[in-house]
Length: 351
Ligand code: PMP
Image (cartoon, rainbow, N blue to C red; front, side, top):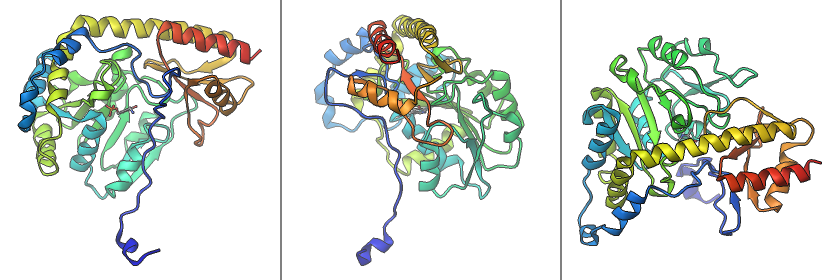
Protein backbone atom coordinates (compact mmCIF):
# COMPACT_ATOMS: atom_id res chain seq x y z
CA UNK A 1 0.00 0.00 0.00
CA UNK A 2 1.31 3.48 -0.88
CA UNK A 3 1.64 5.89 2.06
CA UNK A 4 -1.07 8.18 0.65
CA UNK A 5 -3.53 5.32 0.60
CA UNK A 6 -3.67 5.30 4.39
CA UNK A 7 -5.71 8.53 4.31
CA UNK A 8 -8.11 7.47 1.62
CA UNK A 9 -11.74 6.82 2.34
CA UNK A 10 -12.41 3.22 1.33
CA UNK A 11 -15.95 2.11 0.75
CA UNK A 12 -17.76 -0.92 -0.61
CA UNK A 13 -20.09 0.59 -3.24
CA UNK A 14 -23.64 -0.31 -4.15
CA UNK A 15 -23.78 -2.50 -7.26
CA UNK A 16 -26.61 -1.60 -9.64
CA UNK A 17 -28.13 -4.13 -12.04
CA UNK A 18 -26.35 -4.67 -15.32
CA UNK A 19 -27.09 -2.45 -18.36
CA UNK A 20 -26.20 -4.73 -21.30
CA UNK A 21 -24.97 -3.18 -24.55
CA UNK A 22 -26.70 -5.88 -26.55
CA UNK A 23 -30.05 -4.55 -27.84
CA UNK A 24 -31.55 -8.05 -28.18
CA UNK A 25 -31.62 -8.68 -24.46
CA UNK A 26 -34.99 -9.02 -22.73
CA UNK A 27 -34.15 -6.81 -19.81
CA UNK A 28 -36.04 -7.75 -16.66
CA UNK A 29 -33.26 -6.99 -14.17
CA UNK A 30 -33.59 -3.38 -12.99
CA UNK A 31 -37.34 -2.78 -12.58
CA UNK A 32 -37.46 -0.26 -15.40
CA UNK A 33 -40.74 0.51 -17.11
CA UNK A 34 -41.03 -1.39 -20.42
CA UNK A 35 -43.06 1.43 -21.99
CA UNK A 36 -41.71 4.76 -23.26
CA UNK A 37 -42.45 8.00 -21.42
CA UNK A 38 -45.60 9.97 -22.26
CA UNK A 39 -45.82 11.48 -25.78
CA UNK A 40 -45.97 14.83 -23.97
CA UNK A 41 -42.38 14.23 -22.85
CA UNK A 42 -41.36 13.63 -26.47
CA UNK A 43 -43.11 16.85 -27.45
CA UNK A 44 -41.43 18.81 -24.63
CA UNK A 45 -38.07 17.47 -25.78
CA UNK A 46 -38.76 18.62 -29.31
CA UNK A 47 -39.61 22.11 -28.03
CA UNK A 48 -36.59 22.36 -25.76
CA UNK A 49 -34.74 25.67 -26.02
CA UNK A 50 -31.05 24.81 -26.32
CA UNK A 51 -30.08 28.48 -25.74
CA UNK A 52 -31.03 28.07 -22.12
CA UNK A 53 -28.18 25.59 -21.62
CA UNK A 54 -25.69 28.44 -21.23
CA UNK A 55 -27.43 29.40 -18.00
CA UNK A 56 -27.47 27.54 -14.70
CA UNK A 57 -30.73 25.75 -14.01
CA UNK A 58 -33.15 26.95 -11.32
CA UNK A 59 -31.55 25.78 -8.04
CA UNK A 60 -34.97 25.55 -6.36
CA UNK A 61 -36.37 23.41 -9.23
CA UNK A 62 -39.50 25.53 -8.86
CA UNK A 63 -41.34 24.39 -12.00
CA UNK A 64 -41.20 20.71 -11.06
CA UNK A 65 -41.81 21.31 -7.36
CA UNK A 66 -44.96 23.29 -8.24
CA UNK A 67 -46.15 20.72 -10.76
CA UNK A 68 -45.77 17.88 -8.24
CA UNK A 69 -47.41 19.93 -5.48
CA UNK A 70 -50.40 20.57 -7.76
CA UNK A 71 -50.66 16.94 -8.86
CA UNK A 72 -50.52 15.53 -5.33
CA UNK A 73 -52.53 18.31 -3.66
CA UNK A 74 -49.86 19.56 -1.28
CA UNK A 75 -48.03 22.88 -0.89
CA UNK A 76 -44.75 23.49 -2.75
CA UNK A 77 -43.17 23.82 0.71
CA UNK A 78 -43.95 20.12 1.23
CA UNK A 79 -41.97 18.97 -1.84
CA UNK A 80 -38.26 18.28 -2.36
CA UNK A 81 -36.87 17.23 -5.77
CA UNK A 82 -33.57 15.45 -6.42
CA UNK A 83 -31.58 13.52 -9.02
CA UNK A 84 -33.46 10.24 -8.75
CA UNK A 85 -34.71 8.99 -5.42
CA UNK A 86 -31.19 7.71 -4.72
CA UNK A 87 -30.08 11.34 -4.50
CA UNK A 88 -33.13 12.29 -2.41
CA UNK A 89 -32.51 9.38 -0.04
CA UNK A 90 -28.77 10.10 0.25
CA UNK A 91 -29.55 13.75 1.11
CA UNK A 92 -32.18 12.61 3.58
CA UNK A 93 -29.75 10.19 5.28
CA UNK A 94 -27.29 13.07 5.59
CA UNK A 95 -29.92 15.46 6.94
CA UNK A 96 -31.99 13.31 9.25
CA UNK A 97 -29.86 10.42 10.49
CA UNK A 98 -27.39 12.12 12.81
CA UNK A 99 -28.07 10.39 16.11
CA UNK A 100 -25.58 8.19 17.90
CA UNK A 101 -28.42 5.65 18.21
CA UNK A 102 -28.74 3.15 15.36
CA UNK A 103 -31.17 3.67 12.51
CA UNK A 104 -33.42 0.69 11.80
CA UNK A 105 -34.27 -1.01 8.51
CA UNK A 106 -35.20 -4.56 7.40
CA UNK A 107 -32.52 -7.24 6.92
CA UNK A 108 -33.84 -7.88 3.42
CA UNK A 109 -34.29 -4.53 1.69
CA UNK A 110 -32.92 -2.03 -0.80
CA UNK A 111 -29.19 -2.69 -0.71
CA UNK A 112 -28.24 0.99 -0.87
CA UNK A 113 -29.32 1.70 2.73
CA UNK A 114 -26.37 0.03 4.43
CA UNK A 115 -24.01 1.53 1.83
CA UNK A 116 -25.16 5.10 2.67
CA UNK A 117 -25.09 4.34 6.38
CA UNK A 118 -21.48 3.09 6.10
CA UNK A 119 -20.46 6.03 3.89
CA UNK A 120 -21.93 8.55 6.32
CA UNK A 121 -20.86 6.71 9.49
CA UNK A 122 -24.46 6.23 10.59
CA UNK A 123 -24.87 3.36 13.04
CA UNK A 124 -27.58 0.91 11.94
CA UNK A 125 -29.32 -2.25 13.06
CA UNK A 126 -31.21 -4.45 10.63
CA UNK A 127 -34.50 -6.02 11.72
CA UNK A 128 -35.35 -9.50 10.51
CA UNK A 129 -38.38 -9.83 8.24
CA UNK A 130 -40.56 -12.81 9.15
CA UNK A 131 -40.60 -15.98 7.02
CA UNK A 132 -43.21 -14.40 4.72
CA UNK A 133 -40.97 -11.35 4.25
CA UNK A 134 -43.32 -9.20 6.34
CA UNK A 135 -42.07 -6.45 8.63
CA UNK A 136 -42.44 -7.34 12.31
CA UNK A 137 -43.69 -3.96 13.49
CA UNK A 138 -42.74 -4.53 17.14
CA UNK A 139 -39.08 -4.53 16.01
CA UNK A 140 -39.48 -0.86 15.14
CA UNK A 141 -40.84 0.20 18.50
CA UNK A 142 -37.46 0.39 20.23
CA UNK A 143 -35.19 3.36 20.80
CA UNK A 144 -33.60 4.42 17.47
CA UNK A 145 -31.89 7.17 15.51
CA UNK A 146 -34.35 6.96 12.61
CA UNK A 147 -36.22 4.41 10.51
CA UNK A 148 -36.34 3.66 6.80
CA UNK A 149 -38.08 0.96 4.79
CA UNK A 150 -39.46 0.69 1.27
CA UNK A 151 -43.17 0.10 0.82
CA UNK A 152 -43.64 -2.12 -1.16
CA UNK A 153 -40.33 -3.57 -0.03
CA UNK A 154 -37.54 -4.35 -2.48
CA UNK A 155 -36.55 -6.89 -3.62
CA UNK A 156 -39.48 -8.82 -2.12
CA UNK A 157 -42.38 -6.79 -3.58
CA UNK A 158 -44.27 -7.18 -0.31
CA UNK A 159 -46.63 -4.33 0.62
CA UNK A 160 -47.34 -3.35 4.21
CA UNK A 161 -50.81 -2.11 5.08
CA UNK A 162 -50.96 1.63 5.63
CA UNK A 163 -52.16 0.99 9.20
CA UNK A 164 -48.87 -0.80 9.98
CA UNK A 165 -46.88 2.03 8.39
CA UNK A 166 -48.84 4.59 10.41
CA UNK A 167 -48.29 2.74 13.65
CA UNK A 168 -44.52 2.74 13.08
CA UNK A 169 -44.61 6.49 12.35
CA UNK A 170 -46.90 7.38 15.25
CA UNK A 171 -44.91 5.39 17.80
CA UNK A 172 -41.60 6.93 16.70
CA UNK A 173 -42.34 10.62 16.86
CA UNK A 174 -38.93 11.38 18.34
CA UNK A 175 -37.15 10.30 15.17
CA UNK A 176 -37.59 10.64 11.42
CA UNK A 177 -39.36 7.82 9.61
CA UNK A 178 -38.73 7.57 5.86
CA UNK A 179 -41.03 5.52 3.68
CA UNK A 180 -39.37 4.76 0.33
CA UNK A 181 -42.28 4.45 -2.09
CA UNK A 182 -40.36 3.76 -5.32
CA UNK A 183 -42.99 1.14 -6.25
CA UNK A 184 -46.13 2.48 -4.58
CA UNK A 185 -47.98 3.28 -7.82
CA UNK A 186 -48.26 -0.41 -8.73
CA UNK A 187 -51.01 -1.14 -6.21
CA UNK A 188 -50.12 0.22 -2.79
CA UNK A 189 -51.65 2.94 -0.65
CA UNK A 190 -49.26 5.86 -0.20
CA UNK A 191 -48.38 7.31 3.20
CA UNK A 192 -48.46 10.78 1.62
CA UNK A 193 -51.69 11.95 3.36
CA UNK A 194 -49.99 11.24 6.71
CA UNK A 195 -47.50 14.12 6.29
CA UNK A 196 -50.26 16.44 7.57
CA UNK A 197 -50.59 14.42 10.74
CA UNK A 198 -46.95 13.54 11.47
CA UNK A 199 -44.12 16.06 11.18
CA UNK A 200 -41.52 13.24 11.48
CA UNK A 201 -42.53 11.55 8.20
CA UNK A 202 -40.72 11.75 4.86
CA UNK A 203 -42.29 9.97 1.86
CA UNK A 204 -39.93 9.37 -1.08
CA UNK A 205 -41.00 8.57 -4.64
CA UNK A 206 -39.42 8.42 -8.11
CA UNK A 207 -40.00 8.94 -11.85
CA UNK A 208 -37.86 5.86 -12.58
CA UNK A 209 -40.51 3.13 -12.41
CA UNK A 210 -44.16 4.06 -12.88
CA UNK A 211 -43.29 7.19 -14.92
CA UNK A 212 -40.82 5.55 -17.36
CA UNK A 213 -38.08 8.12 -16.74
CA UNK A 214 -35.20 6.26 -15.05
CA UNK A 215 -32.75 7.82 -17.52
CA UNK A 216 -33.76 11.37 -16.61
CA UNK A 217 -32.95 10.83 -12.90
CA UNK A 218 -35.85 12.46 -11.08
CA UNK A 219 -36.87 11.66 -7.52
CA UNK A 220 -38.91 13.59 -4.98
CA UNK A 221 -39.99 13.61 -1.38
CA UNK A 222 -42.95 14.88 0.62
CA UNK A 223 -42.81 16.02 4.21
CA UNK A 224 -43.75 18.80 6.59
CA UNK A 225 -42.41 22.26 5.74
CA UNK A 226 -39.76 22.02 8.43
CA UNK A 227 -38.35 18.72 7.13
CA UNK A 228 -38.23 20.00 3.56
CA UNK A 229 -36.46 23.19 4.68
CA UNK A 230 -33.80 21.13 6.54
CA UNK A 231 -33.39 18.90 3.49
CA UNK A 232 -32.91 21.90 1.19
CA UNK A 233 -30.38 23.45 3.57
CA UNK A 234 -28.23 20.33 3.26
CA UNK A 235 -28.70 20.18 -0.49
CA UNK A 236 -27.61 23.81 -0.88
CA UNK A 237 -24.57 23.04 1.26
CA UNK A 238 -23.59 20.21 -1.03
CA UNK A 239 -24.51 21.19 -4.59
CA UNK A 240 -26.84 24.06 -5.58
CA UNK A 241 -27.64 22.80 -9.06
CA UNK A 242 -28.46 19.16 -8.62
CA UNK A 243 -30.97 18.92 -11.47
CA UNK A 244 -30.25 19.77 -15.06
CA UNK A 245 -32.73 21.96 -16.92
CA UNK A 246 -33.72 19.22 -19.38
CA UNK A 247 -34.79 16.86 -16.61
CA UNK A 248 -36.78 19.65 -14.97
CA UNK A 249 -38.63 20.50 -18.20
CA UNK A 250 -39.30 16.90 -19.19
CA UNK A 251 -40.33 16.03 -15.65
CA UNK A 252 -43.00 18.74 -15.75
CA UNK A 253 -44.36 17.40 -19.05
CA UNK A 254 -44.44 13.88 -17.62
CA UNK A 255 -46.52 14.88 -14.59
CA UNK A 256 -48.97 16.73 -16.85
CA UNK A 257 -49.99 13.54 -18.64
CA UNK A 258 -51.99 11.86 -15.90
CA UNK A 259 -53.97 9.67 -18.27
CA UNK A 260 -50.90 8.14 -19.90
CA UNK A 261 -49.34 7.50 -16.48
CA UNK A 262 -52.45 5.76 -15.16
CA UNK A 263 -52.87 3.65 -18.31
CA UNK A 264 -49.26 2.52 -18.27
CA UNK A 265 -49.45 1.51 -14.62
CA UNK A 266 -52.66 -0.46 -15.29
CA UNK A 267 -51.03 -2.29 -18.21
CA UNK A 268 -48.08 -3.31 -16.02
CA UNK A 269 -50.37 -4.50 -13.20
CA UNK A 270 -52.34 -6.62 -15.69
CA UNK A 271 -49.15 -8.18 -17.08
CA UNK A 272 -47.87 -8.78 -13.54
CA UNK A 273 -51.03 -10.65 -12.56
CA UNK A 274 -50.81 -12.80 -15.70
CA UNK A 275 -47.15 -13.53 -15.00
CA UNK A 276 -47.95 -14.57 -11.41
CA UNK A 277 -50.43 -17.19 -12.64
CA UNK A 278 -48.03 -18.54 -15.25
CA UNK A 279 -45.11 -18.74 -12.81
CA UNK A 280 -47.26 -20.67 -10.32
CA UNK A 281 -48.16 -23.23 -13.01
CA UNK A 282 -44.48 -24.08 -13.55
CA UNK A 283 -43.50 -24.52 -9.90
CA UNK A 284 -42.57 -21.05 -8.73
CA UNK A 285 -43.80 -19.55 -5.50
CA UNK A 286 -43.59 -15.99 -4.16
CA UNK A 287 -45.15 -13.57 -1.75
CA UNK A 288 -47.82 -11.50 -3.45
CA UNK A 289 -46.13 -8.59 -5.20
CA UNK A 290 -47.60 -5.10 -5.38
CA UNK A 291 -44.65 -3.73 -7.34
CA UNK A 292 -43.43 -4.00 -10.93
CA UNK A 293 -41.43 -7.14 -10.20
CA UNK A 294 -41.95 -10.61 -8.74
CA UNK A 295 -39.51 -12.19 -6.27
CA UNK A 296 -39.82 -15.90 -6.91
CA UNK A 297 -38.28 -19.20 -5.87
CA UNK A 298 -38.65 -22.54 -7.64
CA UNK A 299 -39.78 -25.80 -5.98
CA UNK A 300 -36.95 -27.91 -7.36
CA UNK A 301 -34.39 -25.92 -9.36
CA UNK A 302 -31.82 -23.56 -7.88
CA UNK A 303 -32.35 -19.86 -8.57
CA UNK A 304 -28.73 -19.35 -9.57
CA UNK A 305 -28.95 -22.10 -12.15
CA UNK A 306 -32.17 -20.67 -13.64
CA UNK A 307 -30.64 -17.18 -13.60
CA UNK A 308 -27.66 -18.41 -15.61
CA UNK A 309 -29.79 -20.34 -18.08
CA UNK A 310 -31.97 -17.28 -18.65
CA UNK A 311 -28.91 -15.14 -19.14
CA UNK A 312 -27.51 -17.56 -21.68
CA UNK A 313 -30.80 -17.19 -23.50
CA UNK A 314 -30.52 -13.36 -23.35
CA UNK A 315 -33.18 -12.91 -20.72
CA UNK A 316 -31.75 -10.88 -17.82
CA UNK A 317 -33.31 -11.05 -14.36
CA UNK A 318 -31.69 -10.17 -11.01
CA UNK A 319 -30.09 -12.65 -8.65
CA UNK A 320 -28.75 -11.69 -5.21
CA UNK A 321 -26.16 -14.00 -3.68
CA UNK A 322 -27.12 -12.97 -0.15
CA UNK A 323 -28.27 -14.77 3.00
CA UNK A 324 -31.98 -15.79 3.03
CA UNK A 325 -32.58 -14.72 -0.60
CA UNK A 326 -29.97 -16.68 -2.55
CA UNK A 327 -32.60 -19.04 -3.92
CA UNK A 328 -34.81 -16.27 -5.37
CA UNK A 329 -35.00 -14.44 -8.67
CA UNK A 330 -36.27 -10.90 -8.98
CA UNK A 331 -38.12 -10.64 -12.26
CA UNK A 332 -39.16 -7.18 -13.47
CA UNK A 333 -42.43 -6.91 -15.36
CA UNK A 334 -41.83 -6.23 -19.06
CA UNK A 335 -44.28 -6.02 -21.94
CA UNK A 336 -46.76 -8.86 -22.54
CA UNK A 337 -44.58 -10.15 -25.37
CA UNK A 338 -41.46 -10.16 -23.17
CA UNK A 339 -43.20 -11.98 -20.36
CA UNK A 340 -44.61 -14.54 -22.81
CA UNK A 341 -41.07 -15.20 -24.04
CA UNK A 342 -39.84 -15.57 -20.47
CA UNK A 343 -42.58 -18.06 -19.61
CA UNK A 344 -42.10 -20.00 -22.85
CA UNK A 345 -38.39 -20.37 -22.13
CA UNK A 346 -38.96 -21.38 -18.50
CA UNK A 347 -41.60 -23.95 -19.47
CA UNK A 348 -39.15 -25.58 -21.81
CA UNK A 349 -36.16 -25.30 -19.48
CA UNK A 350 -37.92 -26.64 -16.39
CA UNK A 351 -39.49 -29.64 -18.12
N1 PMP B 1 -35.64 2.84 -3.67
C1 PMP B 1 -35.83 1.59 -4.03
C2 PMP B 1 -36.51 0.66 -3.10
C3 PMP B 1 -35.37 1.14 -5.29
O1 PMP B 1 -35.54 -0.15 -5.65
C4 PMP B 1 -34.75 2.05 -6.16
C5 PMP B 1 -34.29 1.59 -7.52
N2 PMP B 1 -32.99 1.10 -7.57
C6 PMP B 1 -34.56 3.36 -5.71
C7 PMP B 1 -35.03 3.73 -4.48
C8 PMP B 1 -33.82 4.37 -6.52
O2 PMP B 1 -34.40 4.70 -7.72
P1 PMP B 1 -34.08 6.03 -8.49
O3 PMP B 1 -32.79 6.60 -7.94
O4 PMP B 1 -33.95 5.62 -9.91
O5 PMP B 1 -35.22 6.95 -8.23
